[in-house]
Structure formats: C-alpha cells, structure tokens
Image (tube, rainbow, N blue to C red; front, side, top):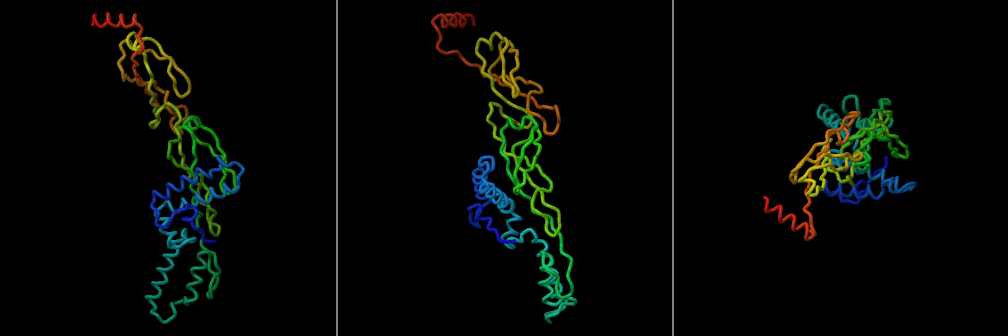
Length: 298
C-alpha cells in the first residue's frame, strides 16, 4: 500500500489541532462535494480522499496509529502484538541469535505474513484476515428533506449506493451502511460507511427533537376580541381559534403537528405557537379619539 499523506490532503500541519482538522475537512468537503460538482470525476476522487483523511485524523486513536505506522496504521495492534511476542522470545532465549523455533530472519517473515507477505524458512504461514477501514461521509440536507422518508443515491468509491433516509433524522445523526467501507485485507470483511447528516433549517420553524416552535403575529383587535386566524404548520395551513383577551407571549400547542418521529411511522411531535401582539401604528384621528374614549372607560 502506497503511503498517503493525509495531512497534506487536508492542507494542515502534523501539529494541527482537532478543531483545525475539522474546519479544514468541512471546507474542502463542501467545495468538492459530488452534488456541487456533477459529472466531475476529479472532484469526486478528491472528495473520496478528503473523507478518507478525515476518517483517520479526526479520531485521536486512529491519528496516533497513523503517525506511528503510516499506511499500516489499521494494523497497529497486530504490529504491537508481534513486537511484544518478539520481545518475549528474546528475553527467554537471550541474545544468542536464535529464539526457540524461530531464527532472526523468521521474525521479518512473521511480520510479512501478517500483512500479505509470504512465509519464511519454516514454511509458509497462514495470512491473517483484517476488516476493512470504515469510511466517513457527510450528507447535507434541508429540514424539508427529512420531513418525509425518501431515497438518495450516493457515490462511494465509484459505486452508486441507493439508501433510504428515514423521516425525522436529526442534525449530526450518523447512520451505518454495512459493508460499503474499505475492502478487507486477505479476504477479511469490508468496513462500513458511516454517514453524518448535516441538516440546514431554512424554515420559520425551530426544531427541538420531535417538536416544532414558531411565533405568530396577532393584531391588537384580534387579541382583545378573539376570533379565527390561519397559521402555518410544516405541512400546510390550519385554522386556529384565538380566545378573547389573549395576552402577548401566550403559547398554544397543536398536537401532532410537529416533526415526524424517527422510524416511528405515522407518529409526530407537537407544534408550539407563541403569539406576538402587534400594536397598531399610524393611527387616524378617529382611531386616536376612540382609544382615548376607551382609556377613560378603564
């Protein structure tokens, strides 16, 4: 496996902080995302490299292994185990150049056999199987996109993957697509594809879990006398009855008019409406006169 400089791919130094790595990754991922560069093979390849680099450098343990073992970072535990075994043999047999059933040359073969090489002088050893690397990707969606269950096609390693995105997915939520990560070593199982959802809210609603929140302007007369108004919900308008003498900041709950519950078909949160009473301006002389009379009555 050729050495890949993940620091260079993200354009950061080896002493970069986790925050710097995350910032660099997000900037490059947005720039080279396939959705923004349709039919651009170069951008697609770059996007794949950026995700691979982020998978390694954004995880402290993976980064530590990569800094020490380079392209073989995925097999760091096997390296450490083999080194420990060699050390134990050395301690048991002394420094006479021979270690029980293993010669010094056998140890290099031992390492080689673990990572795809042939066996040594004592016969060819069985090659170890290793699980492939997990791939990390980010998918940017709008809040409207995740209001209903739908399908998307993603391109990973030049392969199209059709996935179903359930309604109610949260911002920052990660789902796993089994077997669509890096290829396994020596016949080992493939890694998984981990997709993080970045959900942009371009609506007038605030989302908190399954509930939605919104403010509705209410004119003074309607607040005082009551009546009916039309208010927006996420999937259309509904008629709402305003009680007489409604106060500013009054909250009402519209049950079941919130956001879909993740993987719970037909279940929704609630919508909370807060009334904001608007004081009339640019009063006519007649209106001022009437308000004056009203103030005298109070």
